[in-house]
Image (cartoon, rainbow, N blue to C red; front, side, top):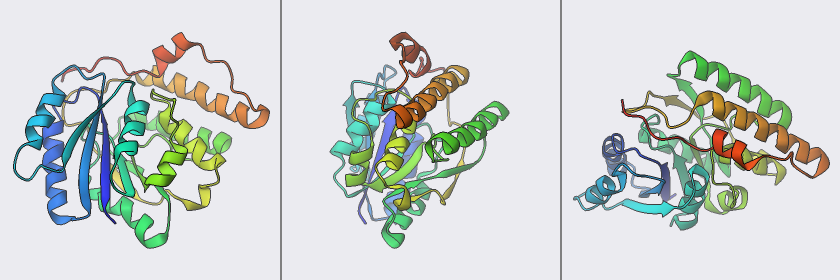
Length: 254
């Protein structure tokens, strides 16, 4: 039941210290949490220095820092590859998820023999995000057979994650392609999406992605994956379009 936590991170200097404090608090009570690996991608705001300094403090020896060359997708894949434990939790590092809920995601794997758990968000979300999220859930369910895709809080057996997380997808479409692989490779019976977690506002700063552009990119990706299931080939995706819609922009200060 030992757990590794992977946190893909881009320019979260204002959030990581508070998040590490929460992780430390959880680790003090939840002995199964062995390591928390922040995988940095395209980070320019000193997040790495903050994390490295924290990792040297008493009680924070479970913190580790790694680096990936791509964006979110590369960071997730890299973190899972280097994780030490057989159960891996992947969570965003912007403070929107509470590490205290990690045991809730792990429990179905340990007690109910699930291989992957995708959290169901509830709580804070602005109106545009809520509408977009609900529409996308209906679309992915209809076209790909899976509803909860874009949540940034997931857990699973390391072996299964390595089998389903794409190796060559570096951008923000990683989650939809990951869940598409879960279905295509026959893991649906071992997928749980019954764990509800609370979504909080970001601790500091604003999101690094444009909701409209990301929605367009994910819509095209979802349609492309649905076409591949029928024809064996995806729709062509211009590289410049992918860069515009599926790559995070610069982080914004509060």
